[in-house]
Length: 83
Image 1 (cartoon, rainbow, N blue to C red):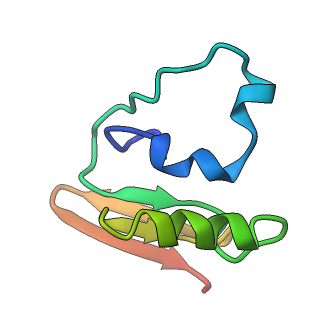
Image 2: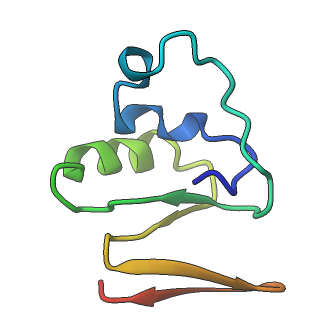
């Protein structure tokens, strides 16, 4: 997630305000031009990941499960692992 230009799209994944009071900077590293949705359909994030996808369908999202990884080599992007 942090490799995207901004991580605010994933705000529904957890209660970050309770865990990090005063945190307001959602700037990511900006290394990739897509937004990863981690823990897709994996307990206990099933509903949270669906919400992130539903509310951010205007973004180039790449959902991955806990058994997958995104591999970026130059301009080639692939998702590896089990669905």
